[in-house]
Length: 187
View: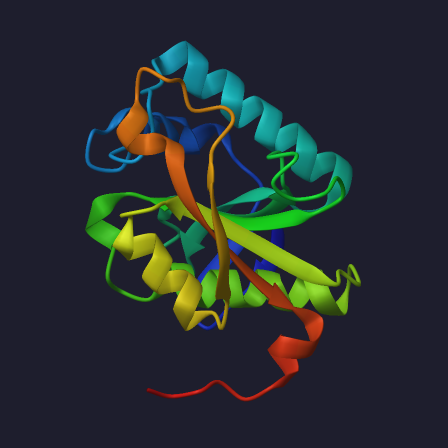
């Protein structure tokens, strides 16, 4: 079942046939460069099951991203409750993504995330949406900027272990309902 559509993508719930791709993106060193861990198959399957149940319950979450013309799952893009208190208050929502590397640089994340930001503001009535990434993850930070988000601070991620000091520092970006209505500044 399609939850959301864009010009080139379908954002939908997870299928059994997505398990191999989901495990691959969660265990691949290139994809997980800015994460302190890799998931084995059992951990990846359990995570996908949790994500699927959340989408069944809420109608959105970390949704599978599928190329509309081929039906090929390429990763996920999602709108999800932010779980980084006290950095952002309870009830905040974040936009996030993870794609297989062969789909990077094609605009898929920006396209899907923009659609989900519209959903968050227009259907869910959110006042703002946040996103965050390790301080030197320029690929993700560039997407945040393309989405019209602005940097509002930095923080040490509370769930990144001290054994990975290079991954603790994060940049925090936000976009509000009001900022979204303003035309983007081209520079």
